[in-house]
Image: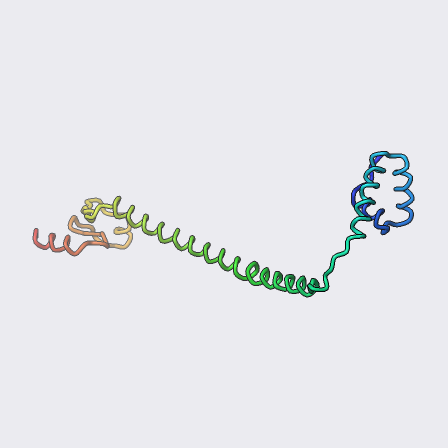
Length: 161
């Protein structure tokens, strides 16, 4: 048999339970000693609370509660919906920017460290590329086909000739 839940017991003692369910609980309390004991304790507590007289004439409880609720709503709206997402977004933007700057810096240093400072020497080829024949040009050993010649290399070539 299922025992009475605390919420139903409070509603039963307070007199707010539906009449059909009230009859069922009365039958159960008559049979179950554990629920009958809980019902007695709850009824005593209910009666003690009913006799308790609190003087609230000196305090405006309703006004104070209303003020606290309004302030809480204003605080939640201002800080939780406006400030925190903006702060999180700002922090995320700073992290992304810092990551990009650090990545570019390390990339630059890595390239500077791995690539030698001297330009590669261009070698004159003795074999004519196939496109030279297709264009109708003649190939010679002095023909330099590198497009990216350094000016210093050209000066060196002129001095050797």
